[in-house]
Length: 243
Image 1: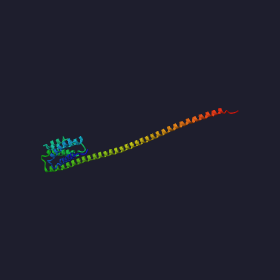
Image 2: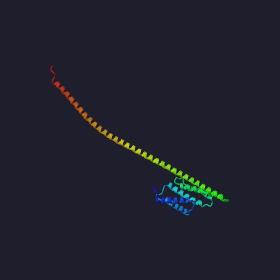
Image 3: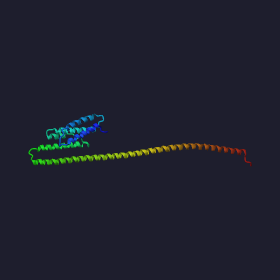
Image 4: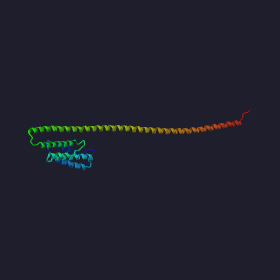
């Protein structure tokens, strides 16, 4: 089923919200309003006549709930509460929800780092600040590496699924061709059998007619022989042999 205009607009706004939520360098105060509009569009999409299937709607609902949960977690007063609220969020497990998983992982790592900063915040010197920034850069690189690896695994899985789908399509095409050839052979055999049966019936009728004709001639010849024999006997009686 083709996507409706409402679903296309919903996906555009969803991608926009995920993009804004993933950019932690600058906070956009409009994100919360975007998510509110996203919830309204999702409600309209569920009520639409040409709505998507339940599985797709469930995925949309989980993505919206994840974004809303991340906003609510960000409002928590302490980093530990933020991390706890983020852990409780439900993450979609479909192959199309890579951005949702990245957002969830990014938020968890950020709040865990804030918890470390709160624990180590007292009595830090400039050297500690420099070391912390270096460790933060290293941690960011590690996170990017993990996310990149996760994305590569998703792409590999999608490629394998595409290869399997192409193989199934090829097998179905070959099987369909074989079945069509078999049907054609059966049809030709049936047509040939009908033709032979018709010829056999014609030859049988001709043979039956010929047999009837032959039987009449046999009776005629038998009558002729009997009459001839009778005449000979009569002639022998009428003209006996003189001694």
